[in-house]
Length: 256
Ligand SMILES: [Zn+2]
Image: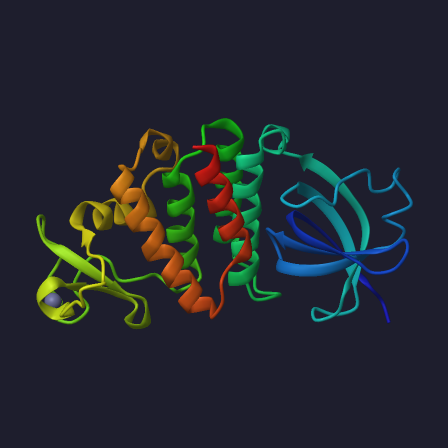
């Protein structure tokens, strides 16, 4: 059978030791979405694959494969961007690792989505250039959820459909996929409300121009509320906790 040869650009999502000398790499690529490939001799031949297979590296990949659902054979892989500024900073490295991990969790294999590739590219370049912020993390989550088809309803009460109104308090219900106004929510005493400001900031961050994100600073309460909403929702959608999120949040708490 003839193996077709392909060329694409992709981010390294993760690697797996396959044998003493081979690696299996999962990429998120521009032209093929998420796919896995084997790099023969990757652990021995430093010349052929010089440190390219590190998480979130952006690479040029040439590969062959017999069919779409088969493991690709990596012919060559060269670094486009290694994101050195991110790698020199532990907090940035953890955020980038979280972005990669979340993209991996929300992307089915073999499904191309150029917008997801661009999201990852935009946010990693931003992280490489700018200071870290809660807005960068939360807006990445909002945008990825939207692209993956799991956008939470935050612009209206999911029961009475009344649009978000300033001065009102809302309650987030992950199981129902959105917010309820204080009249419809019938909150328990332990349930924490979310302010209109937080809801509006998340809605804004979902679509705003990428270059403007660096100008956004979340207030402390908004940072806490939006983290709680999105963490709860992502855990609900995936049916499990994202480990890299917990590690990142713990270290960020420690750093600030
Ligand atoms: Zn309502």
